[in-house]
Image (cartoon, rainbow, N blue to C red):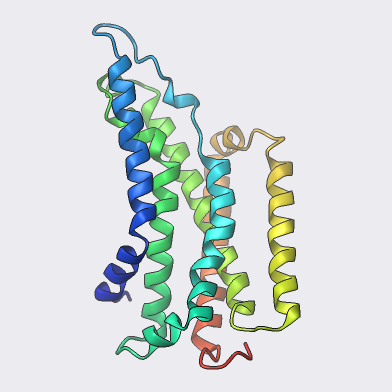
Length: 223
């Protein structure tokens, strides 16, 4: 269940992130069009572009920041004073924050889709499928970050800040190690296993995050 007015409000609040991703796509699309020579292949090979790693780092910091910022500036209390349920608030925040991340990782497919030589290319369906699989993993990381901060973000105690710092450090270390492997090719080589694992992670972290949010005492700083 999603509150549409709340979702629109949250998207407006994050509008500059939406504008940034959109302008990045538009600027590169125009640049690519300027390089196209009629009858020649597209000079920029977007099939070699992958925003997975950048998206992973973005999801780690972005997921937790969406909630913890609202706790510390009083916005969360303001939202819950409205005639909406906690579930609606949680869904609106997660959906509004997750859309730019998904849009980022499928940008190469959007570039490809809008360039005529790609419309009949046999590479495009597989390329789009890879981007969509990667976007599910990004959402899993995003929800994991949100879940961790929901367990600590409403507390001013030192242990909470320690847990947050430890999570960021561990997550960044894991990503740096994963960069040594060709994760996109691994996902592409095992699409079904990747999809099942990523969807399991999404469901797990979504459930934990929502459970915590619906039961936490937001009106105090006790967490």
